Image (tube, rainbow, N blue to C red; front, side):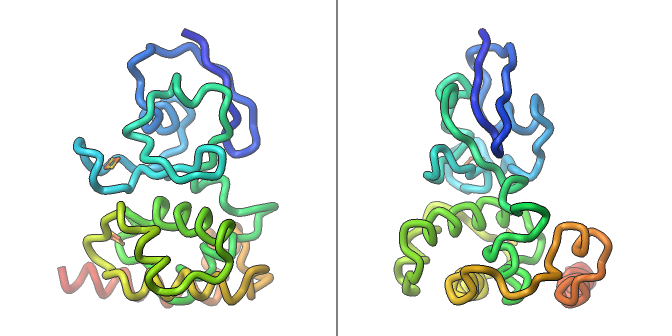
Length: 186
Ligand code: FES
Ligand code: FES
């Protein structure tokens, strides 16, 4: 069957089998592997994408059900090459270690802040309650969302996608060090 939808602002059209899940469609057909697939039980939430601005577990949605809708994945968070404040918050507050849950966490945070620009701890924890982080712990994730709420326009004009990839963003060395230390401990 043929499906059409908008993904990260781009119109996409593909022929797929009706049984294909949205998580597999974005990963394997569109090549957007920032959306992760972590379980077979709809429990982990690492596959969260935004459908018409609402977080959905893309392993529970058929790609065909997303036809005609607006899908946003983590690859669509940065606007014009500048990291979303949520991405900057996760860097500033060390909201990730392995990063496996992070794309889903950040998309849920973006949806929350779009509806509620100043959530309290309870509201943030409720928003991410369907998602599991097995290594960071939730305190830094909650702090990361608070950081984004406090900096709705972002705080670091140099926090561009290119700067992160080049390693020239100031926050990158801290995260790199944290990742290395985590690997050593493991
Ligand atoms: S992959 Fe675990 S909830 Fe979707
Ligand atoms: S950062 Fe590793 S699972 Fe959340």
